[in-house]
Image 1 (cartoon, one colour):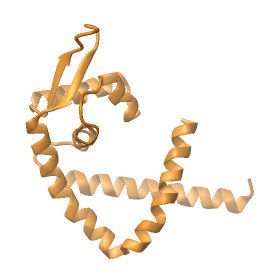
Image 2 (tube, one colour; image 1 turned 135 degrees about the vertical axis):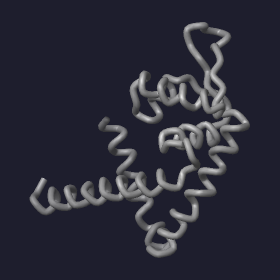
Image 3 (cartoon, helix red, strand yellow; image 1 turned 180 degrees about the horizontal axis):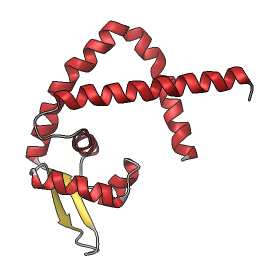
Length: 147
């Protein structure tokens, strides 16, 4: 690759990392008391997919170790936001589902996050945001293939 391409790549990733850090900080600030960003991410995923997932499936989805996911799930279960039960077909595995309280907590988090994100989109301009989404999706797919 040439120098211009390398410089473009470094600039792109520098911006993505800065946006990631700022987004995480700003979103974490408005989440309901006691909810961490990782909690919201898991609750939001479970709400979208419906049904149950194993801790291993969730760990793969979020590119985490099983231990890290087990820790997050323990906190979510303690808060009453997920149900964890044994897998009836394989007692070594567990199954995780979002609870009604978890759905309420996720919805409250969305209510807190949405104005923050919507304001940023409005300031940038919806058309500009729409134009960058395909590039970000392609980048995500490419990086998930390489990782």
